[in-house]
Length: 408
Image (cartoon, rainbow, N blue to C red; front, side, top):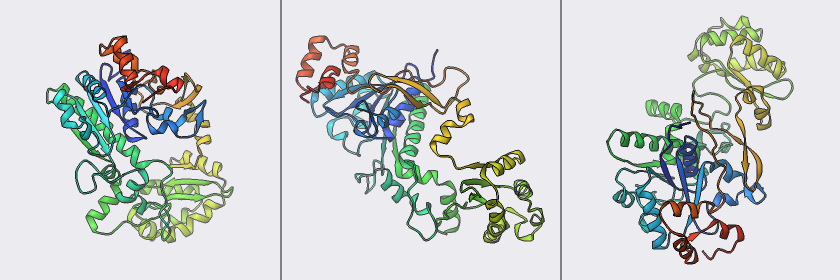
């Protein structure tokens, strides 16, 4: 088996989601990801609930396929270890506040002075430049600043935050894209790259319909609740058994099929609903027609009829229903992972499927400092040197982390 990124080494100085999710995606594809963590507590996500046998399930979900090296980067010897790793690495991923790593000698230019071919990817809330570069940018704040919240929720009501961490995940995906693009640049002898990935700008880029509409017309997009910005009907509907069904009809043929399933054929020729544009312009009238017909049906019955007719639809599933669904089970989205402390666990696999040698979970999320000694030995440090570094508080070893006897 030879995965796409086998032989690629990634250094990750990440916390929470954006940096770690990027590192995990690269690790899934075969990269050797060394996660450099702070002393004592490591990545702050390690403390997040739910905890299983003292280990965070949230941390485990974001940090598989990595090795943990704990260093006190305030000490020069620790920074020397990182730079020794830089010489042997291909990608450096970090999501610290801009300027923080420069202050300790591990900024982009400082790292590339040691290894000009390395791809240095920084993910931050507001980017590496500009007046807000140092402003704290956690997920909710980025969603607010970038406009995401302004178009989420019901008209006239307080904006509703999305149920998932959109800004962090968008940023992580763009950071991964930047890392892979940089690696291709190196492979084609065009040199390494420094990538500045802003979570704010990632969120703005993801708002394709909303930004396109504003830039073309100057009209500020509003919250539309369950309705679509361009199409009608394209929203959630309540059914007779108090479930919700998502239905979308983005062309005239699908609209015709939709109306036929509902027994509303007489309205297909209605001039108000004749085209895509007219249906959106006359959406209130259209909803007056279709909503009662949908509310009279049970969700499973109506979904089955619409699927048979080829109309895009789905009941709104909770996560238990998602993971119990025959399609999700057939695709083997959930995989079993054995964790040294949590025991047998389940995880969501990487969503990319290759014809061969695709992403796999080779190792569970690392215990704090689990691989510190192993990595130092790979760099050529002897047992006495490692023991001295440990006693000096430069590095935390697995046995210290396990016993809680660390002095760092």
